Length: 195
Image (cartoon, rainbow, N blue to C red; front, side, top):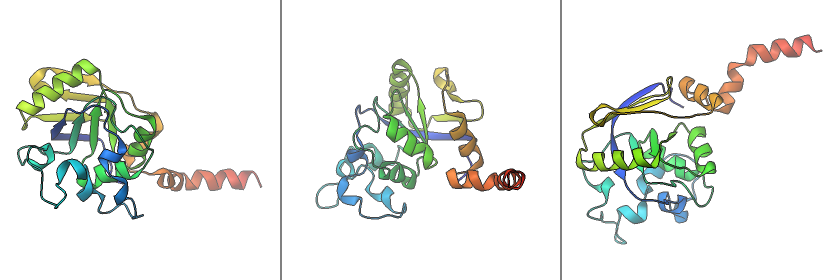
């Protein structure tokens, strides 16, 4: 995984509540076991018509909306526990997802795959979604080390919670195996003492 400390980026505003994992990546695309290529089918049924042409009006099909941050409505990632949803979001290019609530399994899958879910209040989320829809070039600042999300234009400066272990993994670019490898010397020393 890539190291993550700070990010400044434009954001995509997706003001839809209760987005489930089947909407994020439909089940018919879950045949692959590699994480590569899922981004092209992110929100497939919302982005494309049955003939493969892009649907007009969907936010990811509009060039003026882009960035590494997705700001979504409440209850993002509900439904089934498919890890492929996190794979699709990350493969598409998102590094951060902002919502007022995340399904627990989705949140864990996101963190395990280098994607930072940031939970803010419903009031702040509504304010942010409205602003970004009208101001697509606004840049959000994400400071993982200090656990802050900010957008100076609207006076947004919010703290967010994150598990300390997952925070350390993101900052160092570790998955769970990388973390264990980073502790190799300590593990070997412990084993040598206890033989």
